[in-house]
Length: 120
Length: 120
Length: 120
Length: 120
Image (cartoon, rainbow over all chains, first blue to last red; front, side, top):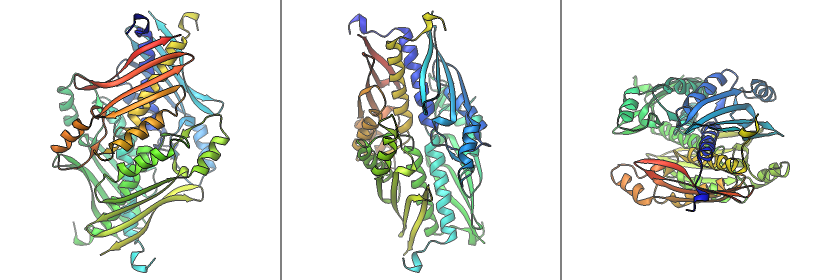
């Protein structure tokens, strides 16, 4: 491999942050969720993903208003977890590089994005 | 359909109980888990599955000794949730039929089975 | 356990069928899907669930018109697999009892139900 | 945000690649798999992940020898998909930056890593 394609620590930190986001979303999407069970699911998502290497902090907020609005239109009292019910922040520290990433709704889609990359 | 193949309420209750077990296992298998995060995951599993129709009670016990034994042999401090770390009881009530089901290890495999079917 | 709560073979067959449905749905819900990738996903769903004990046949039809209608309203060219894109039939044979189960849309919800239970 | 923490295109490409890996692993881990169903599952994994944005190519190889060795020691004829049965390569192209990533076994663990980052 030529030197100029060798990943930097900051790039590896971004890769690690992406892994955490893909894991969080696809492990838990589809889970039955209601306003009453939202808090325990959010806590479990945070604590399970924080187990992964280099993961400093995970914050999961369930958008309860959005969830309640969907259930108000429904004959069911629960639904499946999907991106529009979530706001997530994940912080990764890899070899001194801190990466902050967020998922939130943008134009009707849950968008995962890099917010900042601090390379010490 | 001939009358003798029409499902009874007790059979439907058993079908519903099976759905809950398949959901619980395949929604959460693979989740990163450590002794510290086991309790929050167990609670989330219970509360999310209890959202499903006809589901009266879900009890999830993480087998911490088994989990700690695996991690003692490992360079990692977490692993992936799988059946050998779990004991689960699910109770379903469908049209007055109560079905109790359990998953526990038997001969090295996590076995899901019907424990009792009470047809009122 | 009193004799009258001991599960029958037909009830166990229904429980097994439910497990397969919960597995199929919660293993694959959330998978990225497009009209081009629908066929390979359907085949993988069928073949993986047919591995499970007592499972005779699994038929997965992706509702392409529904999928294409959703994508026509979207800026994305794929979406996440969920119940409204699926029609599924699962046949289980347990100790000579054949159970046929289906999932299809009813009143806007994907409904899993027992279709017939043949107890030889 | 100070300018020096603004992510570069190459860092965003690495983040995207990580998302694909986390998705692939946690969407499909736990799927029932046997030597006969391995090929259809690998194809579905490739085609579903290739739907995701900026994903150029996904190659999934199931390590059949490892799978057959596990089943030879077992009374079951299938098992659950997990990392030690997989070798995966994912290529992402984001704004002209091509990132090649691989997952393979290292010291008994499935390790996901960045192989090269080409920033045009």
